[in-house]
Image (cartoon, rainbow, N blue to C red):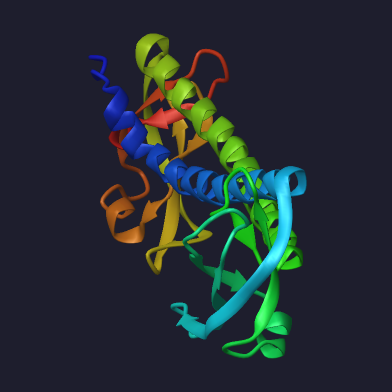
Length: 238
């Protein structure tokens, strides 16, 4: 049988490798914020001096996710004059609910700023530490998921490439249609089972039932066999 030509981009799309971008972006985004917050905390611990800030405004932002859950973030806008400077600096900072409820507009509160970079400051270092830990943990979880998912996806792509390049091409007969426990875009996913010409069994990647029913039980399909693992890949899916 004639061997099917292959394309790296087509295989990446068919195997869903682009989904790997989501946990990677997640990890980089949250991890980057954690690193930035950590760098500021180190700077303030090394070069920080304490001054006074005037509370200019108290603000609350409420957001709802797609499931209706509400997230509340508290902000404080304040102004302070670093020692040796003639112009005050105004900042807006996310703070804890505890501090938000303790202060009022016009009140004078302590502020810690870096004498080497006066615009780097905080009025709630405890909240900053908690935020750094939270963002770091979430970013770390995203990184672990990305590494695990990336390793699994890469192994699948290498298996397909081996099968397309050097694997045996066999005819196989569809033996069954199975419902999986996965839904994609609210569409139930199924797989078909087969037995090839040498008696080896295999299963397809998941797809919608409507698509797989085009290949009813008893119909003949073409599969490519990975010479390293023996796994069969359905030609129509790679």
